[in-house]
Image (tube, rainbow, N blue to C red; front, side, top):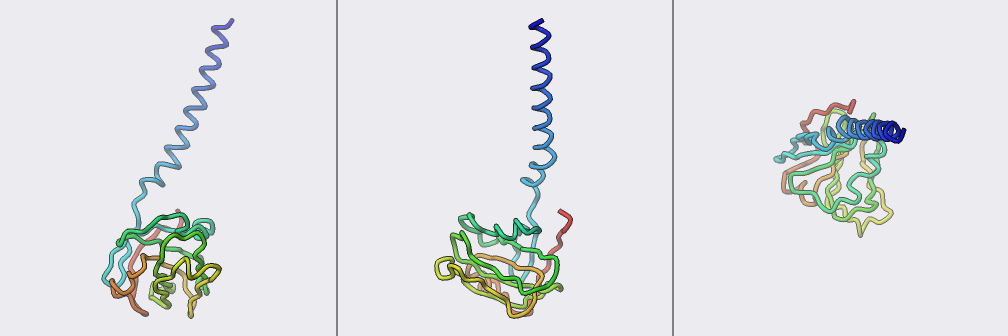
Length: 158
């Protein structure tokens, strides 16, 4: 009788392990190994992480210690509007670039510092669909100006 009970327990534990492994393989691993999107703007090429939904846009770069000079975060919104950006839980200064639906730069904030902007929301002067966050100094070093055009492709269904 105890041998029958042991087989049942092994079967149940095995099923749980397989379920957990399947979840990890199907949902977690693809996100870990998903290559960043390449984004071209000014004279720069950036490995760009995407923020496609409300929670990832709200998190932004909060908790990140730094961005490499060739890294960026692109926030993708459903429509054009005056999307505000705040520096909650940021650890380093950034350049913020707003792009319209044609991917043209419509507003820039340089060297937005977490210390100097506590409680402040940075707002664009024109409606934008995308907000690009870059390491501070990148706008100048990569010659990014108003009306510069960004080139990138994204699958918004992710």
